[in-house]
Image (tube, rainbow, N blue to C red; front, top):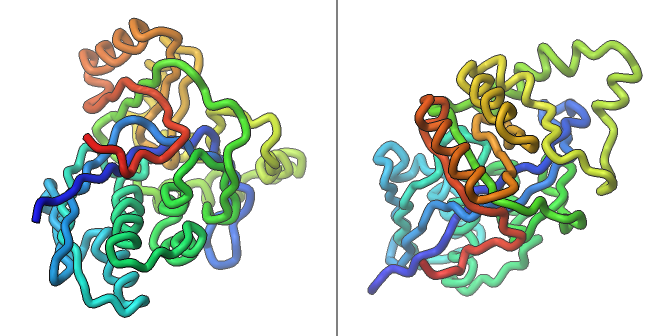
Length: 291
């Protein structure tokens, strides 16, 4: 049987505020998500057992988040049928683009259909949230505002930035756990001025969102010198530049295609970025789009 293809797009945080550090060690967030027209491609076919392969050999098998999520979903619903999933990786790891979480979300949405479970999006989000804080934003299937640890989602009600988008990755990742640990130790608990603490903890409530604000930028750039250099170079050329998620991918919104191409070319030539993408934001998840 021929495998069907499904898309697992990158996401970008339009803003990311850490509003509190919870007693269980998790972080309360106020953030927003939008998709970008670059993706991993999942080739999926029905099978007797659950098999997960990947174009990056190190991500093949039971260690892959796709396998873990599907195995748990299969067990929860008593499904005997399996799936064969092959992941064609295009998104860099530890980039703040949600690559592994996106793969897991797309595989879960496909399995939900093929196994005839037909769980609602909210049920899928509740099931998958413990496996990764970014998975819910992909299961929501549209640009969103998120609170809690990222699992409480509402439609994004503000205009999405228009123009050509350049994504750039410096070739070195930032561990999400390390970024949050650095934030806890060097940023959050160092804020002793009550007014500053109040500003950090303030929630946007969906109003006057500061696109590009990212509470983790200071920590990520401290942990990854190439990221700091990349951000600086991009900000020298384009007005609207920021870091996505916990890093290390950066985002620029350019006014013209020519500006976007020139920026991406210069970053590559100066070896500030080992991976770039020129495209645009997507307000809807394209997982069923044929390529």
